[in-house]
Image (cartoon, rainbow, N blue to C red; front, top):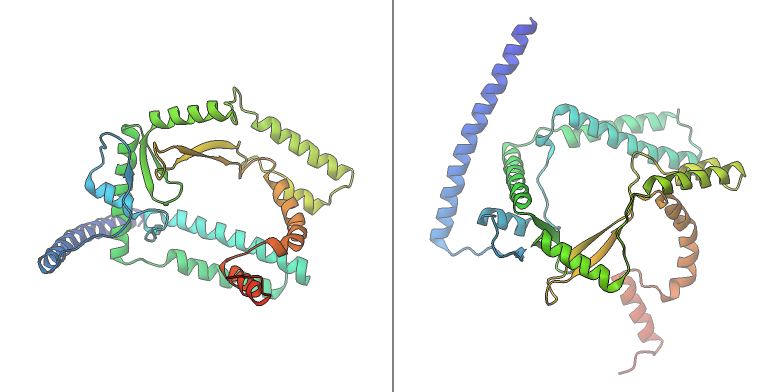
Length: 317
């Protein structure tokens, strides 16, 4: 029975692949016919920001460059679940369920004193898991699967050519579109910036675990002296699996002459990040309270401030 079952599964999968291949061929023909029909009726012009290529000769073809132009920061990708196995999707669902339940249960226990064994939490957990399964495991249309796999292959080919040509792809500073430059040019400009400003130096060794051990020692010492509570220790304690040394990288500024680089320091996963987030959560409300009169939250708040400014007679012609 096991051999028969394996044969039937293999045969079924082969038929599915054959059907999908034929569907892909038919779809390509239909798309080409549709495009020719549109071109015969009117001139079509694509309107989207173009990628900035700052290299003498690029090995990417027109299709790849057009994809990079369209797939900027605001590009909405198609559903990627068809690229992963059922086991991977199931694992992702369980992780999402666990993360959401951790946040919800902590809030319910802290604010409403609802125990973990309460019926309402159990029912919510079941409904959440069902909803996540519907969102992540629902069968996709063939059109969605075809588009996802096509874009995936195109993206892999772009990555291969960029790596082979020693190019660097970055999002620009202001315009939010992609920029392609050579790694040699980036290294020269980055080194020139460091020498000019003296703000950054290159480390000879990695101090990550030294900083990590110092943070652990400090937090445990504060806890042993009862300066902080157990839940506060958990909030600030770094995790060895996720900590990362802060690093410096640069993004191009093509709107300026010579395309200079803007430095950005990424320190989101430092061993001290938990401490800074916890302190910010404590201090931020106090700061916001005292700085409210000189702080503009958003565009709506700006309009209200201008209206009040005008009503009080401060706005002069």
